[in-house]
Length: 193
Image (cartoon, rainbow, N blue to C red; front, side):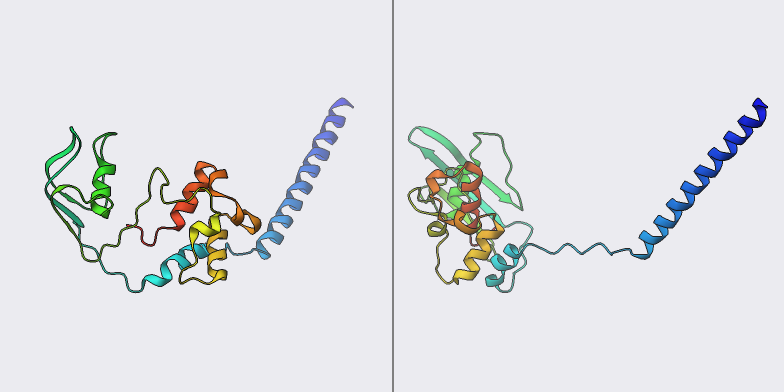
């Protein structure tokens, strides 16, 4: 009698599992028949807005900046001495090697140096300062972004794309975190290399 009971228990367990399996198969078939295609990733509107005014993009050569016998010193501290170089798409170096100084020379922020710099004619430069000196701490985000040649709708769209929505745009720069200041500074760059 015990073996008949075990056999019956196994049959009941098998029926339960078969029933559960059939239910899962039906659910899978239903899900597959109602399948929704994965949406294509649409670029953020900010990039379209930021780039739409730049017109045709000229192709850059492999070497976009050349320096010949560049020297730069701050008082007695020599940062660059008779350096000649060719820069492609990146400028890498150790901390204190003079990257920021060189970038300021390239951008024309600092014009007090010796030597000659040559930039590709198709190159458009945007400079992102580590110190945020281009931002006015007493003005709002909206004031710092500026309104020249841009509609209010375009400016608010751009601000929203950089996560400044509704009344956030009226926050003073001095009240912002470093990350928020970085986003505001990025909006001020016309061209990114």
